[in-house]
Image (tube, rainbow, N blue to C red; front, side, top):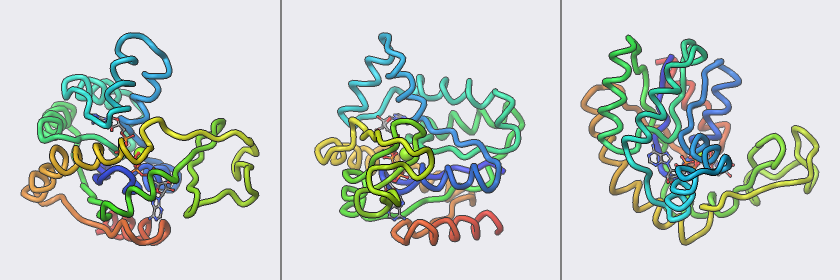
Amino acid sequence: MNLILLGPPGAGKGTQARRLEDTRGLVQLSTGDMLRAMVAEGGPLGQQAKEIMAAGKLMPDELMVSMIAERISKPDVKNGFILDGFPRTVAQAEALDKMLEEKGLKLDHVIEMRVVDDVLVERITGRYTCAKCGKGYHDSFEKPKVEGVCDVCGSTEFKRRADDNAETVTTRLAQYHQQTAPILPYYQGRGVLKAVDGMADIDEVTKEIEAVLAS
Ligand code: AP5
Ligand code: MG
């Protein structure tokens, strides 16, 4: 099964994609994670990505399309994938269609995760992850069981994303409404779009997504 989780920053795409990886054996393809890995490696492209992401703007379409084209060619995506953060523009959606057609792959579901902007700001500014294993947490909504200790690996070191501040979030939300939301009618017209209530609690959202996948 191949699907796209589509939604504004902080909608819960990463949270739900990781759950689907565990329960359904699908591979999460997160362009944000790929870009952060590129930034960590350094080099001129990494430096460009660092600046654009810190400003909350979008990376150029050609770069993102070639990044996904390369990733989608790897053997592990054969059992199914979850796109998280891609496509983000109509041009990227069109390029994805072409790419999938060439590879004989089909898109089964596009799931829109709906959350209002005010809630997104609260979610993003409170988010952090374990520096060792990457498990995600939130200051209010998802705290470790023992304060300051990762539930999964026991590490006591945590980190926050450079773009998770109130100022950058405003730009990221504006980019979503201007550049990414126009993808919704594109997929609606193709009959693959379904929406879930991303405002519900995390387990409830998972159930709603499972219901879409079973439909
Ligand atoms: P990216 O990494 O994709 O970030 P994003 O789209 O802004 O989304 P986030 O990762 O912030 O949110 P999420 O939906 O994954 O939410 P999460 O599950 O963490 O992109 C970063 C940047 O890279 C972009 O700004 C751009 O510059 C660049 N980029 C990436 N892809 C690109 C592309 N294709 N083209 C061009 N540029 C690109 O949840 C958020 C928090 O809320 C967590 O703390 C979580 O615990 C909590 N939470 C989740 N669900 C719930 C719930 N139901 N109730 C309560 N809390 C919840
Ligand atoms: Mg994410």
